[in-house]
Amino acid sequence: MTTPPADPGDDQPVSAVGLTRFTVNLTPRAVVALDGLAAAGPQSRTDAINRALRTSARLARCADANGVVTVLVDGRQVEIEVV
Image (cartoon, rainbow, N blue to C red; front, side, top):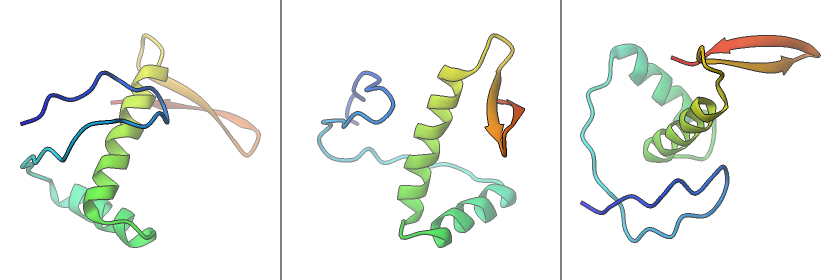
């Protein structure tokens, strides 16, 4: 297994060599979500998982002490709890 690089930030390229293989157990809801993400664009399941992990990490960094991120949706502030 390769050692992951330090957090590169939001959209900075990572210069890791190769891939790291993981085995995960997904709930039925997670499989449906993963298949939906993969079908929504020109990405594979692996691409969808990688993007979801990067997005989750970024949201976690942006969350306040209570795990809440505030975003604008149609001009309204909406609070999203990051779990």
